[in-house]
Image (cartoon, rainbow, N blue to C red; front, side, top):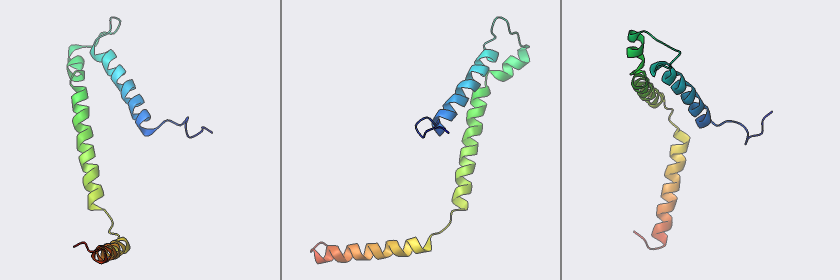
Length: 98
């Protein structure tokens, strides 16, 4: 098993995946000397990073919206927080602050 320091972080995994996809895109879109793609394929490949960025943005917005819509209320934590607020106000009043 790998030690915790040797394990790749999520950021490292994303960066590694982006580097692999970026290098594959560059190899196909920039037409290496030994690789010749038909023009329609090249025209579809050139704006691909922009399309992927827009798709990622849409996915991120949908994920945040879904998580907000299904967010659970924590009634016990709300009651506990209100008690802490009351105690803090009483303590400040006792010290002479308004």
